[in-house]
Image (tube, rainbow over the protein chains, first blue to last red):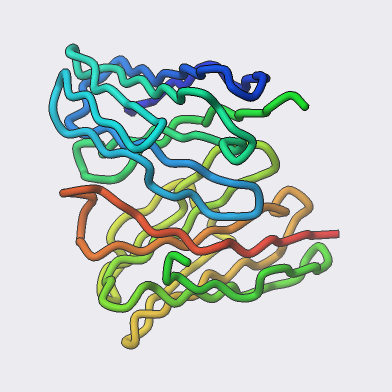
Length: 110
Length: 116
């Protein structure tokens, strides 16, 4: 079946640094979604992408839909402590069920 | 607040027991999804209901079952519990029959199950 590979698995960064993570697949996706899960909470949608090449921002977050439709990238600029959490990419398969990446855990060094 | 309510928030039980987790979706949402998240793991899709009918099944064990009631709330039943069933169980809801449009799922805060 379709799979989404997220990398890196975890990131240790300093406050103020920029962050980049990505999600790749061997299959084409027509929608890419980025969710964030904070400790003790359920995931929340951050950004949704619907067109190849699309670049969408949400505050300090920017996500891109790769032109091959097989990848997507999420960047966070000038990270702050509240950015900690797990970031998941997701996309619907041919049956419109969401396929989820394994997540990128963001940890900010004190 | 996502509008999705899950109870209980925490549950501790013994191996071999049976528990029921409850979910009330957002007002107006017809689809309910159940996910399992083990410690430091990703989200494993278990099952989806739409307007009372089973819509899709993921990696749900035969010991687990779910249903969606006429008032659209859903229950996940976990039986013959094993240590490995300890996890966070999330319910999510959406308006649509399928993940289309924004594809947005609204998640509850989860029910943390500990099996001792």
